Image (cartoon, rainbow, N blue to C red; front, side, top):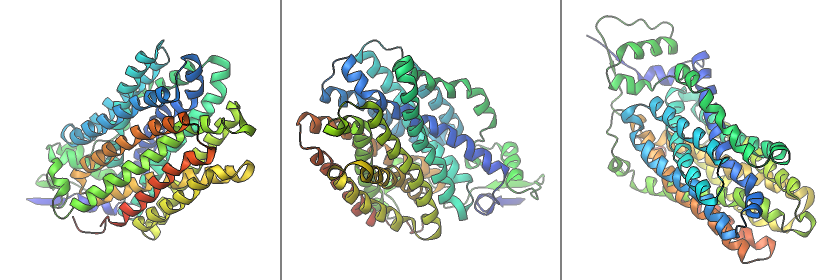
Length: 435
């Protein structure tokens, strides 16, 4: 019997066309994932006026999608390895693409909220499974770079949502930006055909033929024999129950990931949901939707650069230190947002996006590499699910702050504090420990 451990094939593979395919399609999915979530911040001022929403009501409406994302991350993060990462991803695309489209048909806030919740289930569920799939196939020496590059699609989706809003809202109404969310659904048959299943899942479920085909793509010199038996590494083959997140001295790190995700996503969704509205409260920008959307565009652009730069720094130096430094910069930058105007405000917005949304993407790779492969969707899904509680709180907190009519600069203090707490939490993560 010829036993073959698949892990060296995954870790030591040369970057090839196969990896490019996985990177392209997972990034494509994440782009529309980010687009579908980001469009609410784009249409927020329009919906408040059309449906006569108070700031608190508007913040609560934003949180329906985020609550759905929390549920989706818990659900699909847990079952992804049981049904297969590919099946989980396809199911989530079907949910978020269909119901984002239906949001454009909603005539009332209640129906809109229901559609956003169901779309949120798909948005939240696809993330842990795409990051698990990309992290599994990425060669070890460039894993941080590939995962952060893939997840930078989330910020690109945010940029796409702003650009779509700038063009579509004046010409076709706010509904049109939701109709664009139908694109992944139309391409679903192609995605199903070209996206590979998790190699670990194929081996675990005895699908040896498909697994051998993928191994041949990873290593052209690989020639399976009749007596070849594929094996998963012992460290990879641990169980995938929720309780395993706290075993083998993972307790503190798991809890600290949860705290960091909660605070970081509170900042991201609080700021991105209310940035346009807050900017429009400044006298020099009053009621200027186009200019406010430009600031949001700069914020999302910073996230793309921050994610890619952070990934490179994480591969070259240290992922944990990179995340901590980014969060410290974020706390300073966000606290300073209210004290500047004009060109300097653009710079600060860019840095805020790089060190919050971009840094969240780098932190995703930290989680992906901390947990064993088969535990990765559960670990990442639960960190993301707990983080979604922060994402729910963020827009509501923003609505409360706006309703208090505080001086402009004071609206950002709470978000700066949350970024600082994230830095402290990551400091206590022992990500180098053997699992």
